[in-house]
Amino acid sequence: MQDEILDTNERDLRRSMWRGWRRRCPNCGSGPLLKGYLKVRDECPGCGEDLYHHRADDGPAYLTILIVGHLMAPTILWAFIKFRADPLVLATIFAIGCVTLALYLLPRLKGMIVGIQWAKRMHGFGDEAEAFH
Image (cartoon, rainbow, N blue to C red; front, top):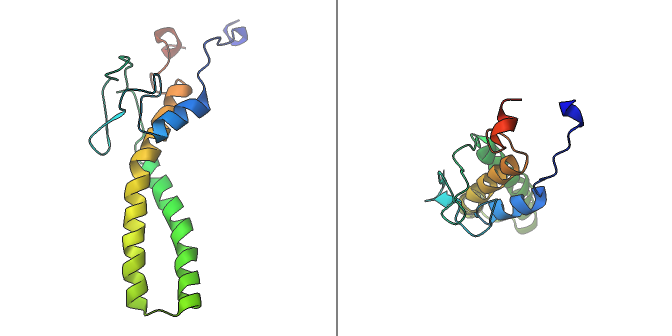
């Protein structure tokens, strides 16, 4: 019987992911999601949405490494073959590039994962009645 009940209050996944990417509350889009660099606020100062439920864990770090590795590995190979620069110069440039890209992506991917969890009502982001089913 309960399987037939449809959720009429569906949350927009794309919008909540975009809000998370911008490091904003997935509910209202105006309040800041993060306090500091990676610490998720306990609740949104704008709308009061509880955010402490999130379970981002190692997901953002894994995705950051995956993206940075897939972008930088072929690029360094291409640069080495195309320009024949000194390996130490390439290592220095690409080390700085990898760190910069990773530091840029990490909080944004964490926000996206929190946004996905909020939209899918995971880990306590749903209604109280849903938490017990």
